[in-house]
Image (tube, rainbow, N blue to C red; front, side, top):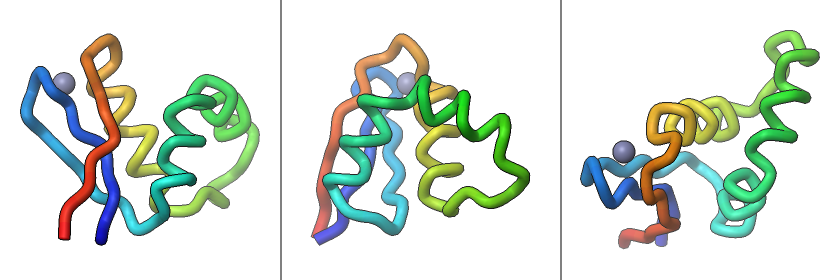
Length: 69
Ligand SMILES: [Zn+2]
């Protein structure tokens, strides 16, 4: 099972390589993580970069956690 973010308005989804718990964590603490990311030079995990990118792109949209087999 893979977990990811799904934007209900754009019907777009991504499935970064990480757990559901981590995705939930990132979604809830997005703004904190973004602040931290500014002070880290290229040391972020790929799933965080992908996740933040998606959440940024769909800012203000209805983004939910989703899953696929
Ligand atoms: Zn969207």
